[in-house]
Every structure is written in C-alpha cells, then in structure tokens.
Length: 334
Ligand SMILES: O=C(O)CCC(=O)C(=O)O
Ligand SMILES: [Fe+2]
Image 1 (cartoon, rainbow, N blue to C red):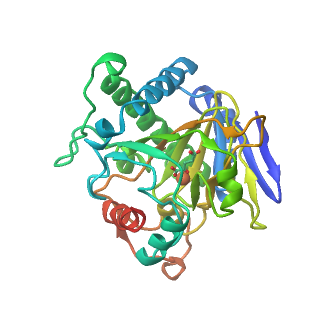
Image 2 (image 1 turned 90 degrees about the vertical axis):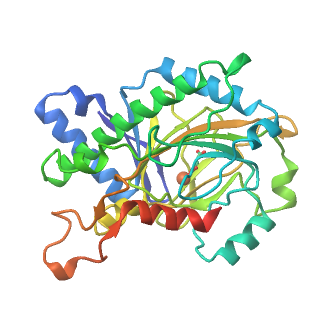
Image 3 (image 1 turned 180 degrees about the vertical axis):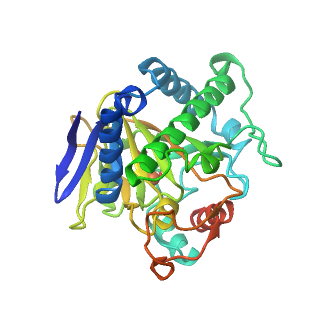
C-alpha cells in the first residue's frame, strides 16, 4: 500500500493510498496514518492516491483554471491581490517572489534579478468577514467559474481535516484533536499558471526559475500538478530532486506553522519550480498547478501539540495566533 514515489539524494517521498485511511480496516487505517506521519517527519512531503477528489473533478478544475488565465490581462488586473489580510485576487507575473528570505529589501533585490515566471489567482473562504472574494465576471467560457471553485474549496477543506486526523492517529493522540482547528476552513485555493517560455530564458540568467525556493506557511498544502514537471524538493544533502507528476495523485507537504506546532517533529521542506525536463523545440510549454494552502482556523492559538514534547522546557516556541502568523509571512513576499 506504500511505495516510494521519489527516492534520491537521501530524500524518500512515499506514495500512500489514502482510501485505506478513509475506508480501510482498523489495521489498514493505523498503518496508513503511520506512513503519512512518517513521510511528514522525514521528507516533509508525501504523495496521496485514492483521494475523495475524482479525476473528473480534477480535470474540470484544470480546464476552468486554463480558461481563467486566458482572460485579457486588464480583466485579471481588475481584481488583483491587494493585502496580506485579504490574501485574495490575481497576481500578475513578477508580483510575488517566493523565497525563504525574510528581509523585504533582500526579497526586492531577488525579485528584480529573477522574477518568478508565473501568475496566480488566490481564492479564500467564502463568507470570511470583511474579506469577500472578488470573482471575475461570468460570461462566455467563464460561466460556472465560482461554483467550480467553491465546490473544490469545500472538497479540499474536508481533505485537510482528514489528513490532520491521520496525523493525529499517527501521533497517538485523539483522532479528532485537530478538528477544532480545521473546521472553519481558513484556507486558500490558488490557481497557478506558468506561461510558455523560451528555453534560453533559463540559460541567459542561471538564477531564473518558475517559482523560487521556499517553504509553505500554514499547516499543510495540497498540490495538484499537471503532467509537465518542474516541481523540485530539497533533499537532506541540499540537492533539489524532481517531484515527478504521478497521475491522479496529490502532493501534500507540511508548512512552517505545522512544523512549529509539532515542536519540529514534522518538517516543512524547501521546494521550487524550475523548467521541466528538456524536450524538443525552443520553448517550454505552459504548466498549470493548483495549490490549496491549509491553515489552522485564523482565530486559533497555536502551541505545541501534546505528545510532541515531554516537559515544559522542551517546548521550542511560544504560542502564536494562526491568522497573525500567516499575515506576517505573506507580508514578506508580496
Ligand atoms: O506549482 C507548483 O507545483 C508549486 C507551487 C508552490 O510551491 C506554491 O505556490 O507554494
Ligand atoms: Fe509552495
């Protein structure tokens, strides 16, 4: 039920059948939970198959995303990303620079030297007070856009809750321990488009990437990639290893807040997006991916999960509010 999806440079990313956690016997459930936790503790990344998200759901989402990005730039700019507090809307190529740098001046320099070659749309939870999603006008190919996105948001919210339950089972705490932290669904759905690009762009500027090396901020990220490739995960040796697309799987990685919450029992691993493995021709075709960034409910106070420390003095971090933590991290990269 478990095999290695990636094995290189000391990095082993397991591929786990999540249906065994959701619908298996008590033993299968336990075994799947153990494998999931182990993957997060070692690689910080896992692949899941047997998901409650069907290949049709997924196909429909990617098609809808491609239609969105075909809109004229002026239309997309009419609902652009404004503030870390809202964290919603369109980001044009060059807007966000994902990086592990924190100092805004350093980020600015890096952005100017090698802007990320991507554009994205962030969609937050519907109904979050004070932060409405600003939807593109539904005409032509875009009819039904909102419904598709809201449905997918809901399905991913459920998947987040279930993955956190698996982590709880793996840790040997109450299976529902995280439920009060995940039930609101303060998560962000991000559509990503890496436009077609001339191959020489990457040779002229060796620092050029599609998305800079970074770790994610929240609890976990559910990442759906198309078949192009280019996602890489940093191994314990420091090398970047291809996290090759596997059909009908989802890549799940732990974020910085989960690492902190687990007293560093779980790893949040650096990753990036570079050009795909070379093929014929003078251009790299466009790549699409869909990331669902999960967070503990913004109102939650985050302090070390029971079972991840023995005595008070083993707690590495003071408590922190989940929403504040995210805003602070987003403010550094936009
Ligand atoms: O597009 C991808 O495969 C990864 C995107 C990513 O890591 C991010 O947006 O945080
Ligand atoms: Fe990421």
